[in-house]
Length: 205
Ligand code: DC
Image (tube, rainbow, N blue to C red):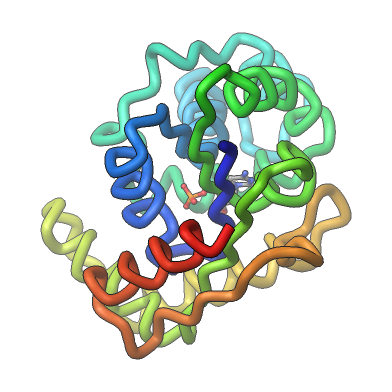
């Protein structure tokens, strides 16, 4: 069974996807890490995240086995990742890798913006996780503080709003729920309650 979990930044989709994959005992791919690793490589080369040539070359070189969540989850890479992710050539270069992952025998859980719309439209279960920008910013703020990144709440909120706008407004695979996705609003749910809802959705399918 293929399960896709999409949604905006800091909606909780990553945590829910990881937990669901553990529960179902299938592999999990956090597709945001692909864009983050492209951004990391481009920045390391001293190029801009808007540089189509540099970003496409980096995308063609991505190695799934080398993705390190700890290293890639910082705030600066999130912003740069959102910029490389708006480049159609980058998305095209990362497409097959993600589709091969989704179609592994035995199934998979994928999370990320276009997993239910572009990567695996055939997925049996598609969940679109949302929460208000304020609640998402508060969660991301806590995460960043725990990583030792001392940003103010209002900076994190501004970053979330900017990324929402860029991710929704771009023409290549904009952030939007698949028509057959189940919406899950986690504004008033903690992670345990949200995970119980995810399990209900999967069981219903
Ligand atoms: O989920 P995240 O914060 O790790 O994602 C980083 C950026 O990558 C985000 O701003 C949008 C982009 N992204 C995307 O465009 N498509 C995906 N499938 C996953 C992430």
